[in-house]
View (cartoon, rainbow, N blue to C red):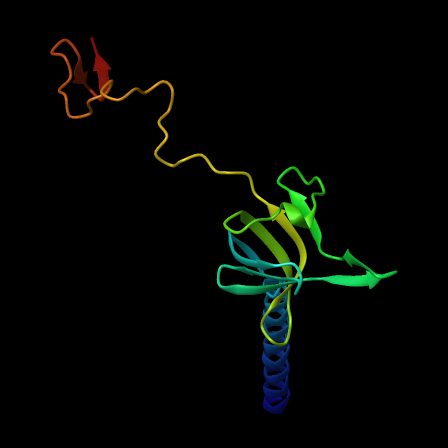
Length: 150
């Protein structure tokens, strides 16, 4: 009877370990598809390469009837197709693709992101100097029993 219990325990542990390994492998596959969101640092259309976030990005293409046809999709931030020539150094892009054996990203699609509004831009309803959070409340406003009263 003891041997049977030990065998059942071993099989149960083996099963649980197998599930953990399968889950970890599945998670690793999901994480393997890289996405980069950064400005273009370099672009060389003759070589079919970009550098984004210090990562080499390969633009996939093939030659058909003596003309280069891009396999990488080039889109604007509304998912409209744009020409590869519309991309410039310092444009912010989102790159999606697969990492190859040399560590470069083979780009499936590159999305040109629109210019972002400055972070310091203030809301229209708050003008500079219209608020002072350190100013005391007027004496007629007071807290009574957890409720503000006039």
